[in-house]
Length: 310
Image (cartoon, rainbow, N blue to C red; front, side):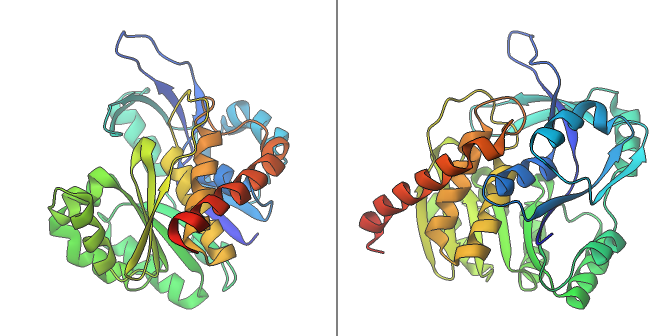
């Protein structure tokens, strides 16, 4: 498969201010990014490690969407399960349903390893992978694999890594990759600034060929070189925002690689996020809405042609 979505898969339960919960839903960066791409194209797969209960929770969605099990490896007794609590600014808190100790150990079993990317990727692959900076040895090995296999890489930075003391390390990594994704609250902390204009200057200074800065319900900025475009969110029936950042990042990666158009990339990313927000977990039947999504993308692009004089 050309487009590969890696990272964790996990089960999510949203906790509300009144103490009620949403029930258990499938999720995790890998499947949300995968759904963001598969809305548009079937030439994609997940590359992820899972618990032995994976099919119990994910099987119905996988079969409904003709999703391949290629790249899915059982590595532990159970899938990681989180409670999620969202805040108005788009940030969130989380905790392990199985308890901090057991949950963290299980998460360790499910981490990706550089040899898995080496086995799965080649020079035609386009890889989405969300990861923090804490493990420098992992990064050294991952970048060596990238140099060896020559795949295209979209990095979605982990929130804990977006701090000023990591900025030079982030610049070093960004000089070796093709695409980068971060959200606005994380970017403000990373660059130590307070406004979107200052953050955009910081983003452009990273030197990544293409990047996105997600701004929650408002949509995203797409950035190419020293130019940027504000792409408004696509308003749909909103149920649950879990995974929208992963979904939009995966879709932006796909769309930019496919079209080389930063505006269309942002539009398609926001459309994928729009379908994602309509239910708990990823969109339930991607094939059923693909044609609708394609028409919406073309219609929306015409509006941006007028706005930006494209």
